[in-house]
Length: 339
Image (cartoon, rainbow, N blue to C red; front, side, top):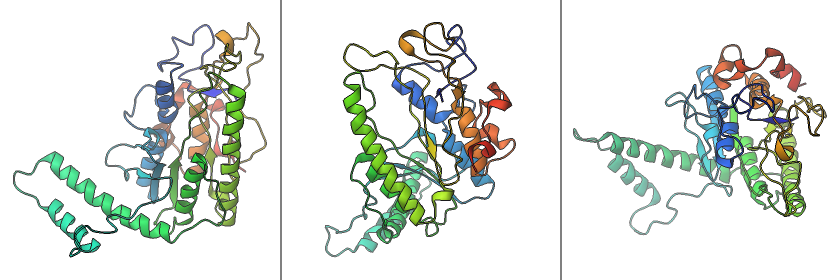
């Protein structure tokens, strides 16, 4: 309840001086929600990437994947864990399935590329070496994932919507986790269309219908594969919307909002966190036009998820570098979030 990118406890009187995050803009608050590191203690990293780093150091076999584009949420510190995988929502295309040179097979093409990019000279440059290394690793990973996903299909028919397609490929990746040699997976999927400055009711009906049908299919697929109890789905956004509408039957950028989390082990059917005491003028959390200062930070939420995922002790400070800005009593634990 009333959750958002909160850098420190704040209210209407001091929220600007308590916030280092640039508020109310999509780009800055999306980054804040993905990084959970307002003071840049671990620069250039995201909350899932840091969790991946910790789990890798502790001996888990991990993987991070986003659909269609890279997400800062999955980026860890250089050299600690494997780089995020970017996969199309339609799956993985085979590299060079039909060579234009009829005398050269696909395998020969790959061997030639490997030989060309393995050549190291005394005057080879750092950038060239990096390019070659990344290219070879990408081709090998592409081949592995193509073969695995071609042999892995879902039991449930997923909707062909943007979110449905993304969750379908995530479900296939999860189903194949043993073939991929992974025991801890983190995925990032996203959809837009919620910036409802006009026609909010019509737009939300369409988007909620898409979200519901996609999550329904994903949930059923996870249950059929006996993975639902090992899955946590966490929804988040850059910010909520104003409680008072604008003149175009829409809403504008706000701050604190309500989010959902689900999974087979989640102790659900509850509302956690603190609602504002009231939403009317005079509420210590209310800004202009019904923008609410959050009472629950993302640090509080991710603290409990990270514990459930296997992060303990001081390692939690790496996953959530700003958690000490909040009372330990307000940080959710795995025991509070899960059965």
